[in-house]
Image: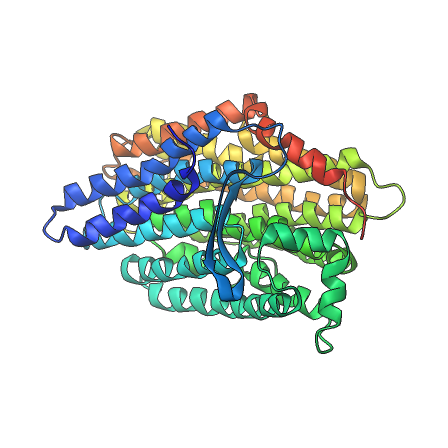
Length: 513
């Protein structure tokens, strides 16, 4: 297969599917779901095509597509893929079909749901592959529209408020980022990430911004930072996340935590860190403690939840904060005497692995909570269940594996990323790593409490009635995710081999311009 337009196909095939479904007004719910699943699976198929031709030894972008677009603004249609992008494309290809299967039995207008979901999937892929801020930002913002309607129209009782809160927070953060890039364009005349990265590496980006009508590079940095911080989210910009994740339907929660949250971390690694290394280094001591707030307070907030969906939502805040902790620790240590390249490499490798591994385990956990909810007429409280292991042993086993993966049990995928992050952060800032251990302890507490209260003890709540074990499409969701947790827990090199040269290259340039 020709790879000349491979990246465009990855991005736009889900949108083609959405357009086709929009035209096929008379389709049955079954056909709508089947077509949506087929077009969603295209990402995984095309991702494997990219994987087969990908050269991990090259640190630059591959499969590049670059065409003139808006000459007056020096805007180009520019796509490219490196090891980090490939990991996220594959993650999207895995989580998206699983999320659609997780919403298979939604009764309200499945065709419209499928259209919005495919639009959301394509927008996320555009964020991971676009290399010009103009259309990168279009993809970034377009992802909000389907996500808003998916939460509002198919969510729980508080879905409307949660959807508006989600959009207001993210659009507010994006406005600051847009202003920042408007200043960058005025100063440099380009929005191309590769060109801007080169200018930043040569020390010219800050100088050009400083000469632009008194605009400080620090102000532009703060604008871009705010847009990305809300998306991850970085503590204390996280308050939109628990209600949005909790009120969204199961499949949408799976996609929000598995894919959309990674867009923010990706932005930190692709945009903020390369373009503003000096400013990020200066702000790193403060940002490091904010990331620790997400690690520790996110875990303790999860520990206090009785709503299982909100518990998993706060767990996502905790796990994604590990990624930011590693990045800020590396940035803080950059340029200092005693910077250990080995520790920096471990921290950055752990960040990318954590993005991928969290996407699998968190999506699986949200699906498991969705199974509990569907079996119990909407109940999902910690005290609404008990003894489920005896009536649904297969479900208990699969859910338990997902929980222990999220906890970081050795032999499962969640362990590898967290181990590398802590290995790296300890070598860069031992105090920060020590404080972050509090988050590990709290995570173990609330996940084991979940496991004990819901699956063990005497039968209680929903377990006293007829509680079916998982079967059919539910197994089609959980078994592949669990199998990948084992595979990448035992053979993490299958993933790390795709981005190790890229990380080594990053670590080799950790000096301030």
